Length: 401
Image 1 (cartoon, helix red, strand yellow):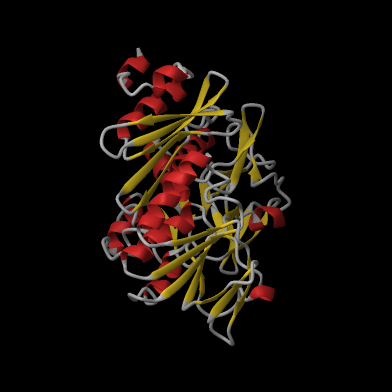
Image 2 (cartoon, rainbow, N blue to C red):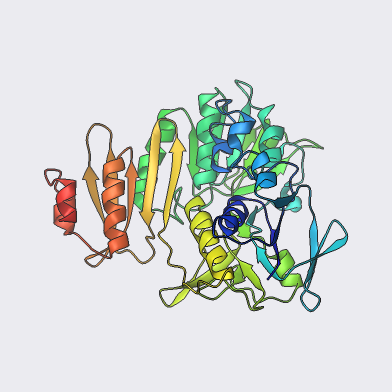
């Protein structure tokens, strides 16, 4: 194996090529990114970067010089349009690029509002790329009226930044509560109260009928007939795995590019990692959208491309920053039937998800100790007594004993 091509220059792609070199691969490595800048962090885009608290260079995962120093061909503004599996080439900017092994780290793409309800009007934006955030930043003037469609983490993080900058913020969520897809009612209530305390108008169980305006958005009509004046709209209605290149090549797709436990796709020469990949996990298929998974899975795939043959075992963790609250999440709460509340010191709070007596996940707000203890327990496959967790007099470290 002399030539490895990696398509997708996000967190997963950057981690994968760095790992290949670190593990001693001496062949040619090409990293193809569709954006005109080197691989960068996405989480700060809608927080510190949008607030003006982080310079562009600090977003970069590594200095641009790193790729040349490691003899990695970094192709920016690279449009990968087709894979020829028989010839083992991927077409980039119209020219075939040969590979012995190909890794797809194409990430995910934001879902958009339909054009039929005004989703194509000017001033309707998503938060996904550096270009997205740079384009919307000029709209963040104090007093501007912003409508945020979607009460997930992306929408709520954008709402927090907008409120801190003095905008008039309204969030509409079609489901009965914010964060309904990813968190328990207790966590939803915590963040509902937090946002309302900062002046954000939260409308739950409220759908968007359509946006109004000629070429630029000027207003919104909600399902209950409410009409709002808006200056711009941020759409945060989720993301979908970017499988377009893989689908066109005939690879198996199952909520992402389907891989085996080692990261191989249905073509033994093609691998996948990060947001775009689904993999076997606990008798089903999983796809994780997080920085932690992008790094860990990409490094596991790099090792397996070099012959390690080690199954990927995810250790899920996530975070979200809103105002002065840092939410840290360990584990996956799928299938929980009980939530235990634990009050920490000061304003610290955590919610522990159980299925029966088995600990599945922890949501910790400004409580890094609860997060770390919960994470260690989950990764070790151990479950503390729910009663002990709920008792604020219980020393958290004793749960590890």
